[in-house]
Length: 192
Image 1 (tube, rainbow, N blue to C red):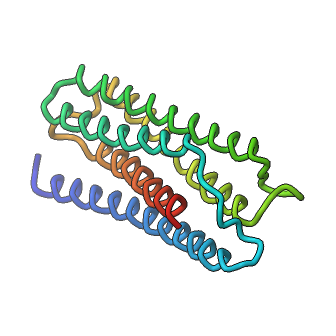
Image 2: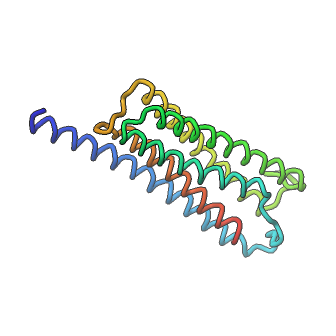
Image 3: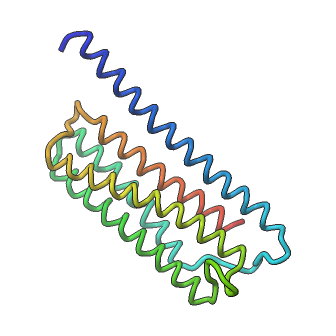
């Protein structure tokens, strides 16, 4: 590889990473705005002060934290050229992501069973905010699951090696971001 080709690959890698970080920053701004609106709205007289999150949200948090760990292990396995270990870790990450979504949907069902809906006479501003925050995050998780499927597909096509990890690193960064974002939202909703 000549020097100009190496420099071009570095520029491409930097630009792809920068685009990802611009996207992440815009998502942070969106959720900062939503949580700020939540804080301001909590001063309303019709705010539910005794509402607690269903337990399924706690379990979903454990699933998503574990998924970040398995994805980290997959990256280490790829760097060590252990394809079989990386495969198991990637598949475990995908399964944990799907479990996360299922537990989040169970949380919505639990909220509905408590008699709170997104809109209508049985809704409240409190639960409407919870629906919006969690659904917005689930949209990003759906994108993350697609990213995981692409990572798995590319892994099976042997596109990642210990020397060629850019696509994997970009996908892993996005997945870890949505995991950290959920941790922030969970702590915010659980303790605020």
